[in-house]
Length: 195
Image (tube, rainbow, N blue to C red; front, side, top):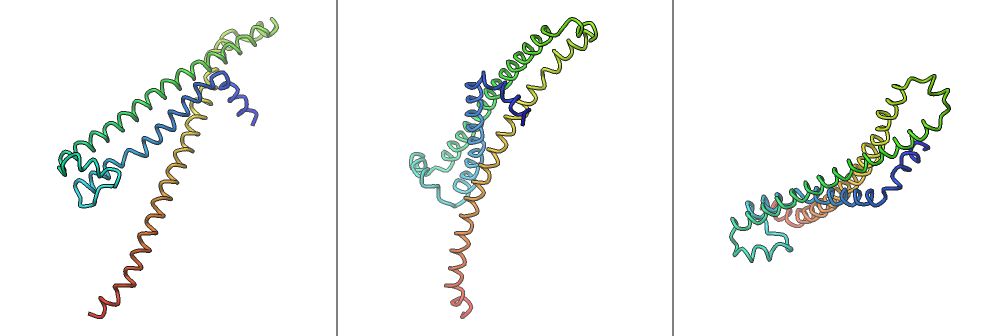
């Protein structure tokens, strides 16, 4: 637990950046969950015979029931969703890298201050290359812990939660459909077997 507290202590000066990264992560997960829906509408309602969802009925009326125009509108909407998702991912990655570099710089400043406070005897006994290497290379551990660990873990947990919610909604819908189908079988099955 001490490592987690030590790691998170580097995020405190960058609270607004962490909040922005978190908001961008949530928006990216939302757009990723939204991405398959235009394809579903194209397959079910444009190419297939299923009616359009109620919220898109006005879209069908505005195209004059032209399936090609509806296809173009839905494909463009899908492209806009994908483009928005990629732009958000680009901004989030840039912000994460910049924040990670700032955190590494902060750790290097702490390490340098600590090295300067050490007695001269330490500098005589320790090779200079070792101290410089630790100051330069070992400082990236905090970047790996924070940017490579905390943010991806939080995004994965949130993504998993969204997928569980979507799966639960689909499961409940499927159970309702199966119950209705079962009741329909109970009502119509005797009439079919009698023939």
